Length: 273
Ligand code: C2E
Ligand code: MG
Ligand code: MG
Image (tube, rainbow, N blue to C red):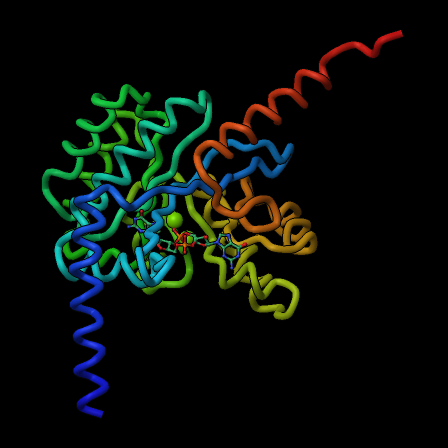
């Protein structure tokens, strides 16, 4: 038992060292998952997701390396890298919003709004094209301070989304006190639409709260036509999930947007006689 624990600790230490090296060497990279308008299924946004291909262990999932980054303080540098890269890539995708996940620790740093403004200036991305995703796990001790920070970001034009809505604890309290622009319904509820009446009821309730508060509602983790149909009728504004696209490389996003553009132009052309 003791031996196993020791091995796990060593393993963790090694991963931490490797992650630090990868971060410094620029070995982390981003993929993007499209978010589609529920009405016409066109790509309106993309979510940036960080990837780490370890030289010997292969792909390490973010569910493993993000917590390591958070525990070791590396998340500040990692988060800034993600933000800068996402804003820079998004310059190639006019009209499309880029959504970036923000860890609680990043958001809690007093300089966070300045970092965001700095990256926007540096990359030249219009602030209205950036959306930041905060999770319910954000353990906000001072709601007034968090609210002020959020409003400072919104004043520059940046939008704020509450990610994984429903899966954490304080969600309703957050909606009462914090000015989110968007809700993302947690994948857990979407995955149970077909099997449980409770999930369906919860989704209806979330959409109704979101709409009543003037928020945009996205559903994530959509995998089947049945889930899509249910969510469309429930009134969700936008869709994200493997049914439409897995997270893909930046060049593949450019190709997808170009193909959508072409299809729109073709639809507009008069039929040749
Ligand atoms: P998230 O922000 O909720 O991101 C959505 C996750 O769900 C992604 O997993 C995505 O690949 C996955 N997903 C999307 N559609 C489907 C689907 O239809 N079915 C299933 N089974 N999964 C789907 P990923 O990339 O492994 O990321 C996991 C989590 O790690 C993210 O959850 C986010 O919390 C965190 N994360 C990823 N990149 C970053 C980052 O750059 N910064 C921070 N702070 N966190 C990140
Ligand atoms: Mg997210
Ligand atoms: Mg999520």
